[in-house]
Amino acid sequence: MKTIISKIDMNNIDLEELKKQAKLLREGKTVIFPTETVYGLGANALDESAVKKIYEAKGRPSDNPLIVHIYDKSEVYDLAKDVSEKAEVIMDKFWPGPITIILNKKDIVPKTTSGGLDTVAIRMPSHKIAREIIKEAGVPIAAPSANISGRPSPTKANHVYEEMNGRVSGIVLGGDSNFGLESTVLDLTVDIPMILRPGSITKEDLEKVINEVTIDPSLSKKEDNKKAKAPGMKYTHYAPNADVYIVSGDEDKVIDRINNMTEDNSKNNIKTGVMCISKNKKQYIGEVIALGDSLEEVGSNLFDVLREMDKRNVDIIYSEAFPTEGVGQAIMNRLLKSAGYKVIEV
Picture 1 (tube, rainbow, N blue to C red):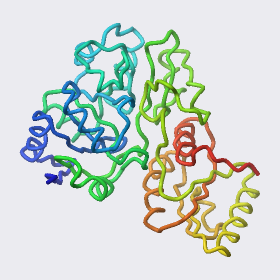
Picture 2 (cartoon, helix red, strand yellow; picture 1 turned 90 degrees about the vertical axis):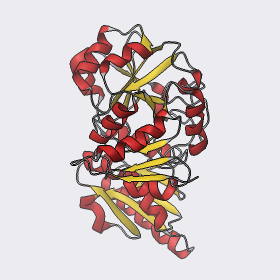
Picture 3 (cartoon, rainbow, N blue to C red; picture 1 turned 45 degrees about the vertical axis):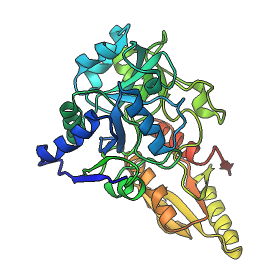
């Protein structure tokens, strides 16, 4: 497949170039574009044949629901029914932004888009390029992360170009994503709103505006959900080529354990990568990459570093564990998925 590539500066958007890509979406084709979270692989959410092309491009199981991206809040009422007062509050407070809400869907949304469910996941992104392309396309855009299914999500233009060129009709290259972690997913079809996927908008953020919020208990377990209501709840996700292990415990013991395992691996010609907070970088041996100084930086850099480890051809990756408060919960959710829940306690 010949992919039409458009390089667009977010601070000086070339509308003519963007209109080319929007036209592809209207024609039922697939287009990759940047959002503030990760790059998305988009198609007309209301066109079943277009949505099937997303699954084909990703190699994604078709019972995994897709997030529908909209330009304006009013579009929610075309796609969903039973829009609650809490949903209204969330939309008013956090949209446009990195939160997805799950509502009961109207028949206009095909089951292909909803992963066979009677619910629909909806988000209004804040990224200027994403907003303009949705506006120009004139249709809601179903868009999971723009990567081969199971691989780390793409946060940089070169990620999508290297992995998806030739697999989709169009790619908009628009710089790096801001947050680096996919949106928070909040189920608003239950009595007490439930986080199905943690993100940069945290449980604490949500409880400030709608009171009690729960977290899906399956997020801490390895077992897949039989019927996932949100992306990332089923199957292996965020996995590089190397085996990933999380090492958790007292900081000094974690450093010693990772270095001991790295030395043992070296003796057996096993190349080891280490991911850590910046202040600990010099204490490790092996292929060491710092994820950042703060949890926000760790979240922003996580997927990029997992991809960099692939480029360095490491066989095993050891990562420090991170605190689970705030955005740390989202970080550990992605890390546990990438590691297949393999945790070494020290």
